[in-house]
Length: 168
Ligand SMILES: Cc1cc2nc3c(=O)[nH]c(=O)nc-3n(C[C@H](O)[C@H](O)[C@H](O)COP(=O)(O)O)c2cc1C
Image (tube, rainbow, N blue to C red; front, side):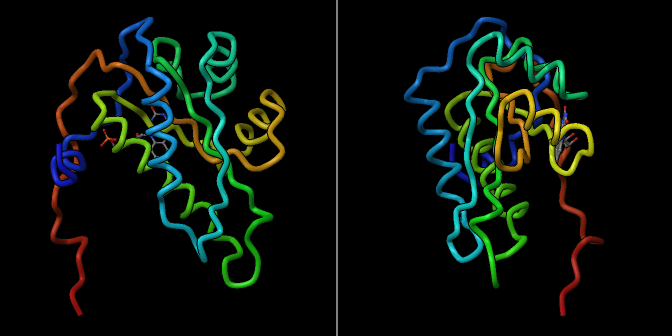
């Protein structure tokens, strides 16, 4: 699948084949894709927590209001921001940097044959402290990415909208 196809085929998947295993090599490829994302001044202000165990997944399901689909998925990845790595001209760009990392995770997952779903954490008033407390996270949790074998094929929702474009 090339980039043009991957971008246009991606959908948020909320139904997964229960019990499917993602090999460690694929998990590494997905994390590597995340770490290839651009970041302000190349500060790479990210850290990743892979939720593989049932216990870890269930904890995330309990504290995230819109991620029940992690129950049947293979793994979750919490993308966190190390905000202290950014100062001066890079200060405060971490949501963009981590967003780019999340998008790379979604696209790489699809190319490897997995479905995924971006579940936002930051800047949720309740969600951020809940993830910090339950997973003992010292930095800032930005998003929970759910990944597994898709058990649905939702129609593509993206489309080109000329009204969103200004050419100067
Ligand atoms: C910042 C952000 C937060 C999101 N949070 C959730 C979420 O908590 N739970 C969920 O099921 N989907 C979540 N989504 C997925 C969106 O609902 C989805 O991307 C959107 O409806 C478009 O559908 P598509 O991804 O299939 O194109 C989130 C997406 C983004 C970018």
